[in-house]
Length: 250
View 1 (tube, rainbow, N blue to C red):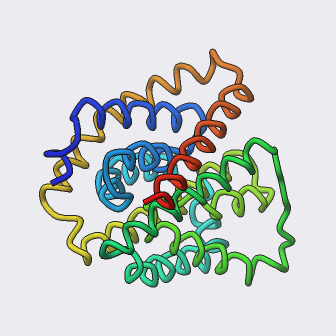
View 2: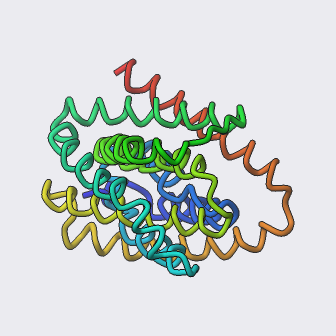
């Protein structure tokens, strides 16, 4: 059982930090939580702990806006593809080989996300390309989530490339991450990793995550956003490199 092998204090501190990042940036809770928790456990064990904190904070985020239905209509093909990708990845995440691969894939995803963030790379999706690129981004996001427990890549860069208004972008990310979290929860339940003990531990993790979010919201007005983003992406780069070294050395 996860909590038998891992310090309660370590888990609480991880969720405080992950919640703080989300409070400042509006995203990053699952990325930071899984990246740090996998120092002590497998990515999918870590993913089981973040189901409740991620679901609650993302529903809160998607509900804070007036464009939910238009965004749903625009993104529904991508959101359905996220579920399909997660289901397809379910067969890759089990067993010892799957655990080794999930660590390597997580490391590569964190490296890619860190490099893109530090480089400040931006792209734009033409409206005519959304019909095929949205489902493609959704399948890739679901597949990565099913293997690593992290569902920001490539969903977050894709949504940022749609040239949405700031509030609409935050709501779109909340919608996409909510669907991704629910699809991941179904996959974990199917594999037997989401059970009563895991659900209870995930509920407890909501408390430090919420505290971290409040702290992050307080820091948002007192810290230069550009500096925080650089520190955030540099940390992801270091964690990704560590994951890759550990996976390939093993």
